Image (cartoon, rainbow, N blue to C red; front, side):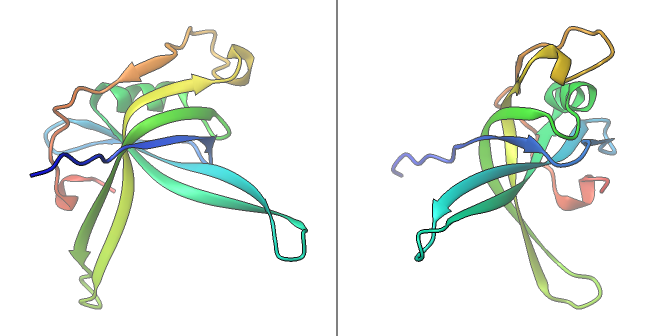
Length: 142
C-alpha cells in the first residue's frame, strides 16, 4: 500500500474551558473546541470573516496538561490527525458521524500573563506517544 498522510496543523483560540474526563480504565481524555479565522474578499470586494470550529481530543498526559493549563481564550498551536467515528443514534436509528482532531503536540502561545494566573510555570510543548489507545465511543464518558 502507498504511504499516506493524515496530519492537521492548527493555530487558533480555545472557545471554552476544556472538559477532562477518564475512561473506565482510567485513561485521561480532554475535549476542547478550537476556533480558526479566515479573512477574505467576497464578490463585491468586501472583506468577510469566517470562523471554523474544530473539535479537538487529547489523550493521556497531554489531556492532563490541557486540563491544567488551557483555558477559554488560550491561543494554541496544535498538531494532530483527523479521526472520524460513526454510530447509530439510539432514538432515530440514523447513522451519525463525528470528525475530531486527535492532538499529538500542543504549544501554548502567548505570554505567561495571558495564560495561567496561578503562578505555575507551564511547559510550552507536550507530545503524546504514537501508541494512543484505540477507543470506541462507549469508552468515552461524554
